[in-house]
Structures are given as structure tokens and as C-alpha cells.
Length: 109
Length: 115
Image (cartoon, rainbow over all chains, first blue to last red; front, side, top):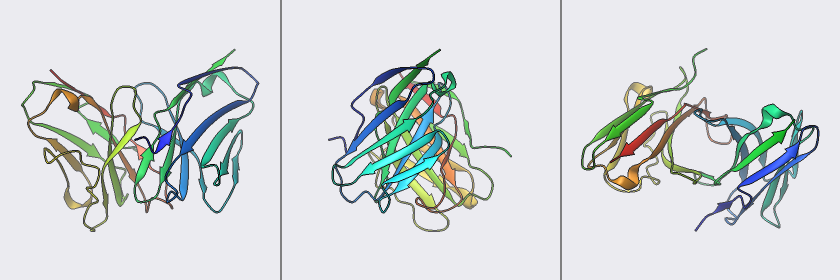
């Protein structure tokens, strides 16, 4: 039973456009949410986080939105760049970290 | 400064053998995590060390798995009597503080293949 779901295994976006990556969770005890980016043969790197007391957090081109009632969060990247091509994991924290299966983003030049 | 390092980067072993995976966290980081990522899956939490507190072992999948952290620094994850389903990438991460306060920095992982 997956507590954190990323229903799109892959996403392709044109350079300069917006990328929207989605994540759904089931455990209402989660109160902290993160996005990580992973390149092949490397460990994940932290991108952005949000606490459950907020509904939006922004850092440069990256914005995370949290909808607690829907148990849904999304990562917006705008404008998308070819270097953003990677696998993106969302993660939730309650008592320990639970990661989604990832979405592979391809930004096409 | 140096990031999190893991060794070996790749390990091939035969079913039934024991393996040890090593993690060198960022110097001064009090928290250390082990995860594994099986093919097509997300990261699965295994164990969490925080300072001198008793580790959170709630993610270890069986008693064949154990981990130690010596002197608050280097950690070793041991898998005894390996099975084919143990094949995965094992990732280590460290952070300067608690889960909600400080970012986790991941190592490159150890890719384990059990034949």
C-alpha cells in the first residue's frame, strides 16, 4: 500500500514552458513534504520543502503547492530548462520519511 | 567540502553470502539515514541514527538487516544471508539536525546485485 504516490512515471515538457509534477499521499499524519531531484548514478538532491502549516513555498524557478484537504502536493518549475531533466521524487514525513516512486521529467530543447 | 560517500559503489554477491555497505557522512552531521531503492520503486526508509539516541530501526525489512554507527560518524549496513530480493541501490544520507529542520544530503549509493 503506497502512502505516497506519483501517478505519472514520466513527463515531457518543452524548454521554457512550465513543468508540473504531482504527488498524492494518504497518511494524514504527514506534516512535512519535500521534493528531491535525482540524476543517473547520483544520490537525490534536495530541491524544496513545505510544512503543513503552509500552502505554498517558492524558491527561484521552483514552487511547491500543498493542498491538505486533497492530500495533494505539486511542484511547478518555470521556466523549464534542459538541465532540469531528471527523476523527481516527492517525500513526506510523519514518523519517518516516505518517498514516492518518482517521475522522470524530460525537458526538450 | 566533501559530501556523503559510500563504498563500494557496486557489489555483486551470491545468494546466502553476507555483505557490508559503508557510509561516510558529512563531517559534523549528527543524523544518518539508510534507504534502499528497488527497481522502479521509490526510496524505502530502512534506519535512522540521530546523535547518541537509540536508532529508529522501524524500516528494516527483516532481522537479516542490521546497521551500526561507530563514534557518531561512519555507518555500516550489514545484510546477512543475502537473498535475490535484496538486490537494490542502497542509499545513505546525512543531515546536520532533525528531519524537519535540516536538509538530507545523499551519497551516490551502493548498487547491490545478489545472484
